[in-house]
Image 1 (spheres, rainbow, N blue to C red):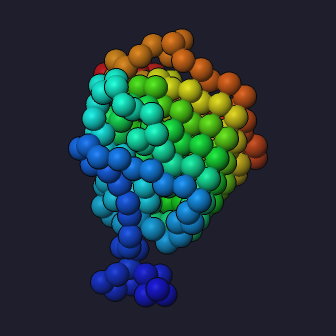
Image 2 (cartoon, helix red, strand yellow):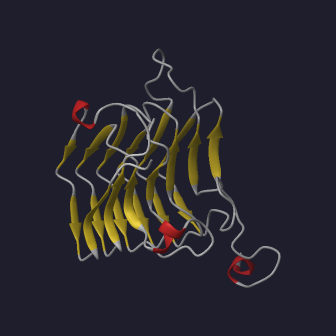
Length: 193
């Protein structure tokens, strides 16, 4: 309701969805607006959190977000954390607070981000300092397939910083991703020590 836009008990504190420590998260053809809980880490619009890490059987079609729209949210649109085989395909994120499509820790192997569009993510003053300059796509390494994605009007189109020892970036694919009218197209940072 409109109360989420005014200061008070419900200000910037609304619905989020996620799968935590197992389970399945499969969402398609859904509109997310004014979702996420602004000051709470882990309460993103949609979020996989440690979903059967290392599982190699019965993994297809267990974790996907397809054909969804995220706009005017109070948190990041999509977060993948320690979840293998997640598929994020054909989604649009417009005016999300913080990074739009976010892969969290670097050990998310065999993820697919394909045909996604990130448009004008907004600074997030309540999360990390890095969220003040939001990227359309934030990656802690290149441990998945990233194909045919587009970032438009972002502080950083793609932000890549190696955080952990997941797969080698040469193992998978980064292909045909574009950035338009953004402060930095590709913002590459050295590995954190």
